[in-house]
Image (cartoon, rainbow, N blue to C red; front, top):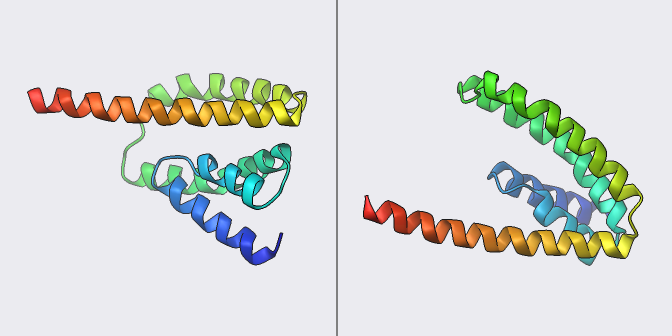
Length: 127
């Protein structure tokens, strides 16, 4: 895969990530389907790119006083533990099964987003 294609995929993933959707939901399929990378490699690239995007988002949210630090500490430890368990599980999972699981995750996420937006709009209209 050429460097230019990787840069384009990075920009697309960063833009989507900056909008709050999570760049990995698009970056991983781009890298695997269009880029021809393995599922494990695509997921590791996504995790590495998340670090600078997360730092930038954290700085911006902190400057805008949008962080509830008391609640954040209750999320940090379980998130770290979940990341460790997820990394161990994905490393020991067959690549094809990992790709299927990620695809199912994206489908469920899409359905959840569609349903929650539809019902949220109905609830907001009644108010």
